[in-house]
Length: 73
Image 1 (cartoon, rainbow, N blue to C red):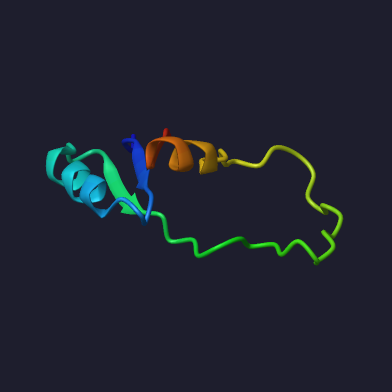
Image 2: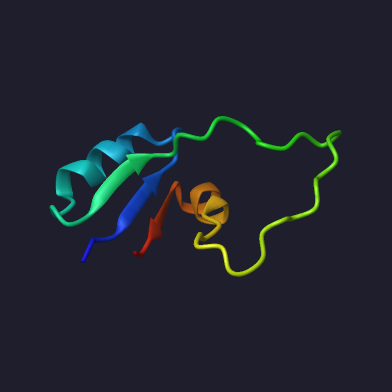
């Protein structure tokens, strides 16, 4: 079974380096690769075509608040 994934804010390179240094092998530490907002305010959102549960967790609150987020498999 895969370990946990730590996503670290691009604005916290020191936190990223520290977590890479102390993390165990079964845990992955990555920098947040997103660049800016994906959806502009002036663009209209298209209706959601997918139905059912999406397999992701919104990590933005944790990234803004703590500088990192933990995602479990």
